[in-house]
Length: 195
Figure 1 (cartoon, rainbow, N blue to C red):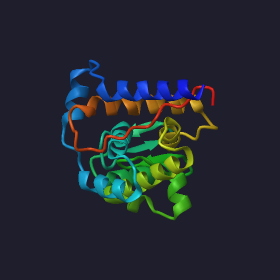
Figure 2: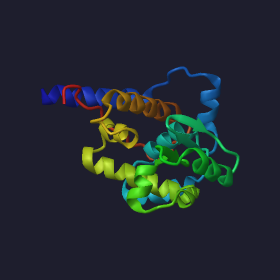
Figure 3: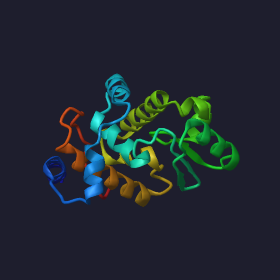
Figure 4: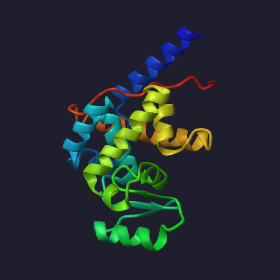
């Protein structure tokens, strides 16, 4: 059984690495655009041993690299400035679940770590927080899709939502794999479906 699992995981990773699946023109163009705050991603990914390609794919999935993105109770907003993002959080986010910035850091983390929305909306801080959170999930689950899914949704709460999220992240990695070989190439392993 273990040999089959290893074989399946290896096959999955090969498919991810060499996939040339067709995508919409706008998605292809978005994957080819320069990555904002790339130096922050590189520094923090190196610091926490997180694959750069994975962190970048998560940021693309979470905010499309919009530094002031806000999500309140599942509704996404893309304010034109940090000040607009803060005003939105203050007017609609009180007492609700919300996520902020490039890596969409949830208010639960902000409260737990004693970080203000103002601080979390600073792009370099947001990347640091997001990569650190991802590193915690990788420590917990290994470099697997469980770690990726848990970055977004606690697995115990909604495993299917987590699986869908992880699938979206792998699609970003697939699309960008041919466009930027400079980003870290390590990718999560697929987990056995029966675990």
